[in-house]
Amino acid sequence: MHSAVRVEGLTKQFGGHTALDGLHLEVPVGAVFGFLGPNGAGKTTTLRILLGLSRPTSGSVTVLGVPVHEFSTELRQRIGYLPGDLALPERLTGRSFLSDLAALRGRDLRSQHELLAERLDADLNRPMGQLSSGNRRKIGLIGAFAPEPELIVLDEPTGGMDPLVQRTFRELAREAVADGRTVLLSSHVLDEVQHAADQVAVLRSGQLVAQGRIDELLHHVERTVHLTFASPLPITAIEHLPNEVTSSEISENQLIATLAGPAGPLLKAVAKWDLVDVRTTEPDLEDVFLSYYGSGDGAASDLVDGSMP
Image 1 (tube, helix red, strand yellow):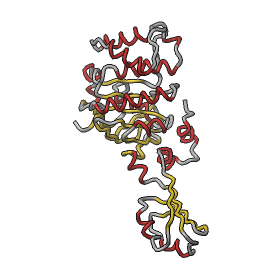
Image 2 (cartoon, helix red, strand yellow):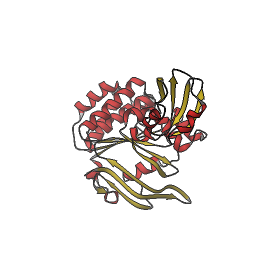
Image 3 (cartoon, helix red, strand yellow):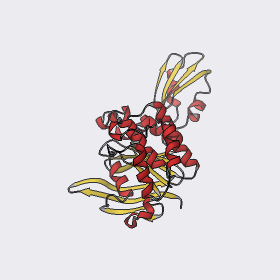
Image 4 (cartoon, one colour):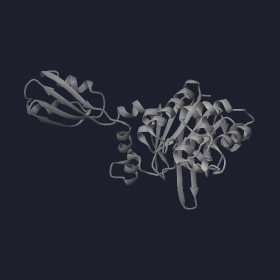
């Protein structure tokens, strides 16, 4: 089995609204896979279909080698899940709740619960109704990771958590992958995905607009290169720049170029002048996202700065 999740032509309609429109998606086994898009892009709808919680209008979905229309208790046992709208019994303590979850799996996971609670600095003794949203999500993370399932599906996993706990979460995700398991991470926090994920998929209006390794996606995003020379450049220098340069400007002994592709052809083109310094502004996942959504898109701006609920 090479794919933990395979989605082909997935469509989901709610009345006259199309939430997913012919979505194709493949999540490889043994990877942290980031699922990106603002509210309304179709992320949560996709996850609910993967988990057998909602039926597709059309298309096929396979999870851990099993067609989703054959979703069973046995398949559910192989999956860990943290929903975005996590609802926990307010009167139960975290320890009691996790014990009940483990009992549904027919397992004793107390030692795993205690270990994860220590790593995440989670309070298992207080009623969960007394916990902050971030601390309740810690309980949800423990429930998802403790059984060591083959596939861990996480919807906005670290909302309300401090940076140290977010770092611990990333460690847990990497440990799961090192053990051959798969983590599907849906988030609107680009920094979280960039530091945790091996691959990402970007959704827009229910359609896949990009999928691949982060380094591959970054390679296709424009970046700015500042080249400094020992003496002023002739204005004719910009006439011989390669196609990878989409715009350029000469200012005395500096050439400022916008580059879409490798820097090698540019450096070769200016080799006849005395180059003394090269500085580049490297793109990040925010640049990738904005290249598909556009910086003027209000939803995209919310996603980038992490302010979306």
